[in-house]
Length: 244
Ligand code: NAD
Image (cartoon, rainbow, N blue to C red):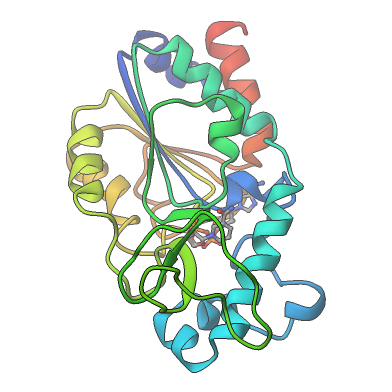
């Protein structure tokens, strides 16, 4: 299943960079944006809820959707794919994880060098001034408000159309250009600017390995695609390369 060429490449690798997306958490029970939502939320397209415009139009709806996602994320645990990445970090001299995920499953699995592109589902800040808030009181009919400035509270995530935290993409591009191997795992490679990161590596001639059960726009351009679930492929990879 794991080609010898990849085993040898990874055994010699000093620097490995990984970009992960929602697919890495799918086997933990966190739905990806492209999976149908369930229950109450099935009729909404997540891409229509995860925007500042959606929040302004219906703050209570968006606040409640994130409260539901937070509750869901609190009940799940890392899967073997998250643990395999944490293990790889211990085995490779320089290992960097860049994630589009807003859950904390990489942290829970023990990964250390994590850069979050899209914020944190468990953080809350105010809409107007981005004051970070630890405790809030739920209000009927609207989101809670900021104790410092009175504006509505919202999740500390990056919505479609919003800027990423400063310098994260520049940092990722620098790291992937210096890497011996780059992985793109569980991401549709459609959401910019994160999707540009593996493309930078491809353009720099760095071998990019994609792990995904489905094809993506970068599949034709990567050095190798491992078609499968990250929770199955990643443990098999760690076992094949390092015997662990
Ligand atoms: P996406 O929903 O666009 O794509 C998910 C990708 O994962 C698809 O290509 C799919 O084929 C693949 N996939 C599904 N199951 C898989 C598995 N078991 N193993 C490996 N791959 C699998 O997700 P994206 O590319 O991360 O981008 C969408 C946005 O969704 C991001 O901005 C992200 O912040 C947000 N999001 C995050 C979470 C989370 O934090 N867990 C969940 C949903 C959405």
